[in-house]
Structure formats: C-alpha cells, structure tokens
Image 1 (cartoon, rainbow, N blue to C red):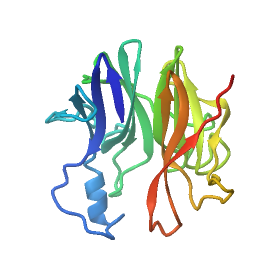
Image 2: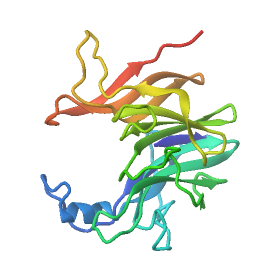
Image 3: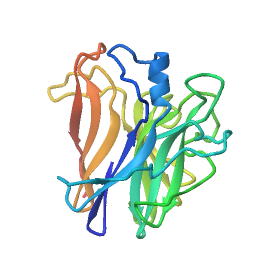
Image 4: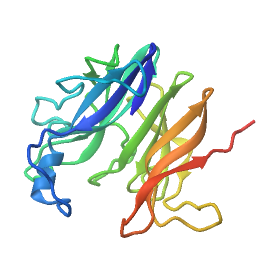
Length: 244
C-alpha cells in the first residue's frame, strides 16, 4: 500500500524473516505456517513512484512484546491513510496459541505523527461485529481512506457479518479509526460480480483498492481468479458510477 505525504512516497509492505525456501504445494503445511508467523510490516520511502526506494532494517510495526496481546504472533496486511497531517495504520494481527497457526485473526490500528513512525497501537481490536463473534476471522484485506473528518474502509466480509453475504466486500466507517460501523448500505459488491457481457465471475474479489481522481473514487480494483481451481489469477478494474 502506498501513500503520498509532503511530496514523498511511502510504500508499506509485509515481509518475513523465515530462512528456508518454500516449495510449490507447501501451502498450509507446518513450514508454511512457520514462514507466515514471521510476517512483519515495513516501510520504504522514495521521492518518485519508480524509485529508488529506501528500505529500513527494522519493521515500522512489529509484534507486541506481551505474549497475550492480540498481535503477539504476527502483524501483516498494512492499510495506511493520511489524516490531518498524521498517519493511521490498520493492520492484520494474530495472537499466540498452542496451535502452530496461532489464535484468532483480527485487526488492529496504530497512529503516528510521521509515516515512518513510531506508531502507537490502540489496545482494542477493530472491524468486529457488534454482536461479537466466535469465528476465526471475520474481515480481511482492508483498504482505508480519510475524507471530511471520517475514516472509511472496504474489507472482505469473510463470514458475512457486515454485508450479510460471506465473501462479499463490505464498507465500514469511523470517526476515530478505533470504533467502526457498517455503512448504511454496507455491501460494496457481492461474492460474484458480472463480467462485461453478462457472465458471472468464478470467484470473489480480494485485496480491494480504490483509484481516486480529483478526490473522487473512479475504479474499484480487486484480485480474483479465472476458475475455482485457481489456474489463473489477476486484478480487475470495475468502473464506479458517479453521483451528480
């Protein structure tokens, strides 16, 4: 995820420190989980989007030292936004447990005066349904932006807790980035979308992203796959209808 702040470009990314190679077909094996559990969030800085980029030796956001914290095992999937000359960073977090994969997958938020940190973490989880949940994960892949004193987010609604449809994209809003509510019409797009010509998609959209032009969202981007076997995956761009 990239933000522009005071003429500089900041690229937030997730990386691992796992020292062994992973082979094709190793997804969700013990080695895969061990690699995933070393995920941390870094930031690289450049004057231009085509580089060169300066990358730092340490994560801009690391796990908490408290072994009982919601983000004690890993932090990943950074979603930054600039607001009032400061930066908010929404991120995926996993707690420790007796299982190799760790505990629940939830989301946290942190704040900083500079895109390079240091970030101060809010102690509570965000993107939680008001009724609570026992699910392992309810939201994923947030895209976050700030507009007229309000934070907005598009997330993958894993269990349908916000939009009513599992796998759809849901819209949320917040006035402080710490307490979030579903938008009045929360479903951004359903699990299936229609290709030009009327054919339904084989799968859902993931990793949502909005392209803004002159302050208005013009396209919704997302990753999808051509078939359920995942033989081919790619990004799509969906034009948005503008309200007059």
